Length: 419
Image 1 (tube, rainbow, N blue to C red):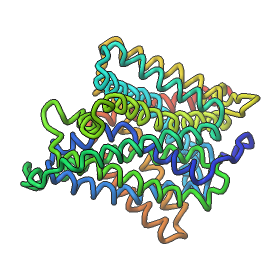
Image 2 (cartoon, helix red, strand yellow; image 1 turned 60 degrees about the vertical axis):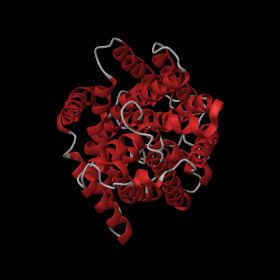
Image 3 (cartoon, rainbow, N blue to C red; image 1 turned 90 degrees about the vertical axis):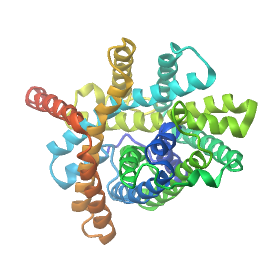
Image 4 (cartoon, rainbow, N blue to C red; image 1 turned 30 degrees about the vertical axis):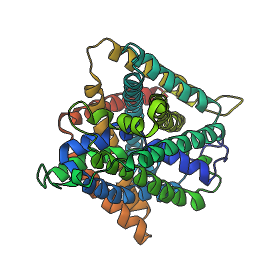
């Protein structure tokens, strides 16, 4: 899978960092600090520390691979280079399908938070989610330069609000809320850590747009490190004040950030909560939609996806075929959800296994492609072990990638023969 000549390098370190933060720092900040505190109490801070440290090798693996092998195919391309084209295309399908379901789930989670914060009827939830996603599609149509600039504004705004919430609520932290440290036993740290692993999904998304970086070898690893520090700091500070103010428990955990912002900003809290909910949904949506459309293009030009995914805008050189395809898939997911027959909790579990398998493929590829670098090999091996451990916790959701694999085999055996 060769580098596409249609892409134009336009992204600098600031844009790269914002795209990384936007891809990883999503709706998890809205609910995970409270949910983790429910599981482990004050000991959830230990879980956050573990996850922040353990996520770094995974982030660095994706960063090093992107610096060495910038390509629209992202992880799919890495697996192709390390092993073979068919395996790489299957990993590409896993990521593409994960995005098709994961982005609407992300938007629905955030829109639910917005409707709760602003007291809007539940019927607004789907429409807000649709608006968020199609804004992301609209921005991606104009190319990564504009998208990257907007992502910088979105991420900076989110960071300012989160820091403001921390500073405003820090004065309400009570040391007694950190005692006892292990109210639910020491094993609760492990359970909370497993939950928090999902707060760091997203590093793989930016690998698909590495071709558009001005200097990947110089900026990707730097952007990865800076983004890791920003994300880890924001998550830990939020978790600290959630525990310290005891903003968790029945009826509170899923909206703990709402209470923190209200505590910090008073009458402006509801408005800022709505803005925060919008931004933390929009930022990862922009990154994932851009990544998926470029991956679809890469798969299509090599015969591993329908050819219409390779259609480009003659003016902006953006992947219009992929964006149209994603739009149709997103609308289908929203329609299925709106019928009431499928819950959000069910939809959330579907892309878990395909995301993990994407990471496993990327980390395994890293061990091969980065074997001449001691750092690259070590972080890839460490990341592979961690993701394999997490794979054992996905239970029935493993059926979903099996289904995707069956569709992929059918496509390869029928569609490719026609070509």
